Length: 396
Ligand code: ADP
Ligand code: MG
Image (cartoon, rainbow, N blue to C red; front, top):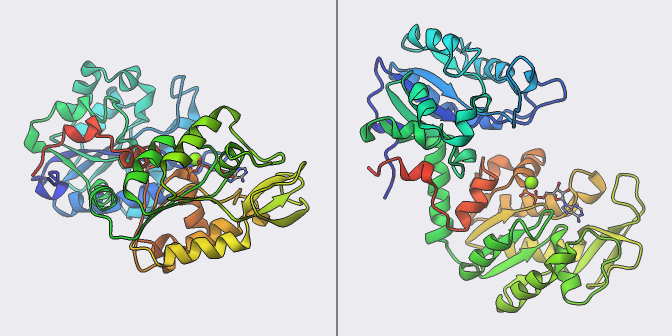
C-alpha cells in the first residue's frame, strides 16, 4: 500500500515540519562538500511553498557531543546558506531546535517562509526518542513530512515520536522517500530478470545479511572490492597482503556453499606493492594473489565479464565499490561497473555512501535509474527490514 504523501496534505497557510536528511559531507572548514542530499529534498520543499505553506526544517548533521557554541562544525548554518542558494528564496536559521530562537522564528513564519532549526542532535531527547522533546518540537508546526530517507532506519525522536504527535491525516512522506520506496519495491518484490546484484566495498561483515537476502531473489551476485579476498581466502587461496576479515572466513564459506553457484568472484585482479597512489601495479590472472602484494581492484577480464552480465540484466542493484576507487590507479573497475549500469537497459539502482559518491564522481548519476540517498537505510531495506519511521505514516 502506498503511503500518504505531501501531495495529500492541505498545506495552504500551514506550517509544515519537514524532517530532511541534510547530513552532508563537509570540507575541513565546515563548508558543504556535496549538496546532493539538499538537492534531493527540493521537490518536496518547493511543493509546500508553491501551495502557500511554510517550512520548518529539521535535520541532524554528524554526531555532536557538546553544546552548539562549542561544537560549531555541527551547526547547520552552512547547510542553511547552501539551501538558500539552491532554492533561491530567503532561508532563516534558528540557533536552537526547540528553544526561544526556534519558537520565535517559527511563530513569525509567513506563507512561503523557510526556517531551518539547529542540528536536532544537540538535544539529548533526540537519540532517546523522548516524547517530551518530541511534543515541544511538534508544537511548532501544523503537519509533519518525513523526507529523510537516509535516516529512516533510525528510531530517533524526529523520525518516530514527533510524527506520533500529529493526527494521522497530518503525517506524510515526501517525494524523495516516495521515490526511494518505489525503487526498493521493485528490487524487493518485482525485479525483472535476469536480476543481478553487484556487491563490493570494504567488509563482508557489513553486508552478510543483504547478501543472504539478495541470494534468494537474484540470478547472479557479482563480488568485487576488498570483500573478494575474504572469499578467496575462505576457498584456500593465497591473498598476499590484501585487506581481509580473518574472523569471517566461515561466514564467507557458508555464503558460497548456500549460494547455489550464484556468487561470481573476480577472475583476475589489479594488484599493487602498496595500497596507495604511486604504487607499482600489475594484473594477475586466476584466484591467487602473490605474497607481498595487495589486491586493489578487479582486473580487465573481470571488468569485461561483469559489464556483459550487467548489460544483459533486467534489474541491477549495486552496493560497494569494486576497488579502492579514491586512488586513480585503482578506480578502473568501479568506473567500468558504473558505466555498465549507465548503459544497461534494465532498472539500475545504486546505494551506499561510497558507491553513490563513485557514481557521482564518474558522472553517471543521471544515467542510472536511481542513486539512493541512503547508505544504512538502503541496505537495511534490502534486508527486508520495516522501519518504525515509516510505520507511523499512514497508508493512503
Ligand atoms: P558503501 O559505502 O558504498 O557501502 P563500503 O563502505 O562498504 O561501500 O566500502 C567502500 C570502501 O571500500 C571504499 O572507500 C574503498 O576504498 C574500499 N575498498 C574497495 N576495494 C578495496 C580494496 N581492494 N582494498 C582496500 N579497500 C577497498
Ligand atoms: Mg561506506
